[in-house]
Image 1 (spheres, rainbow, N blue to C red):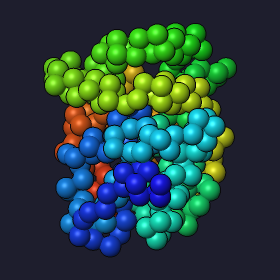
Image 2: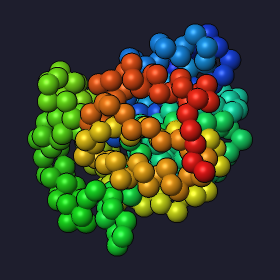
Image 3: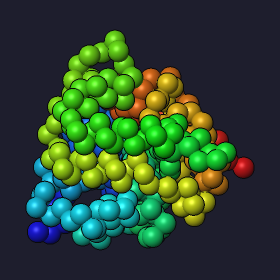
Image 4: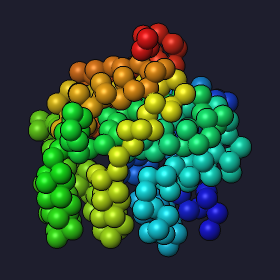
Length: 270
């Protein structure tokens, strides 16, 4: 199957400048529905699903290829090539923030800007580096996911969303998790939570925005600050939004921050 069918690629919008939206673990392209309309008039919008998620072709899943985040980054590059995209704006949530960084490092001419929502290059604490989770905590998380994926989804979705006042948001995330093929989701989780892409951050040459939420248990503030320090040409914005999914829980603030960045009205690292 070609890349368009494989990744369930959708192209919409009225503008010329390409803007790619990449979802996080357990999610799909529908998660961008509250943000995309604000950019559709001025941009060519590209939505897609990682293989195994949403409407992607799960038969195309290759465990060896997707045994590292670079496999997903290569898919992003193939989408750009298939659509003849250059100088695209890449918006990546959670693990897709790092997938975008890997794609930009390999093919920098394809991207003009990276917008990283809740990024983490390494979830595990390591010496002086704080990722937010001990090795034991990551192992326990993966064991729980492996033994009872549905139960894990129902437990973790409210924690990830970080909005106890809005049960519907957590329920949507549970449904999204549970519509992903469990064997693929388990492997993607293992790859996501055990990857270490810290060394790749310094190689990012594309102008970047780090959007950091308050009280994000998956990618805490100190992780976002670390990403900002490592990417020289980056801006850092601590949002009022709570949790790990501001494009769902605080779309207006998310849109505003992205538009400010695209208008070059945010300070960058020195």
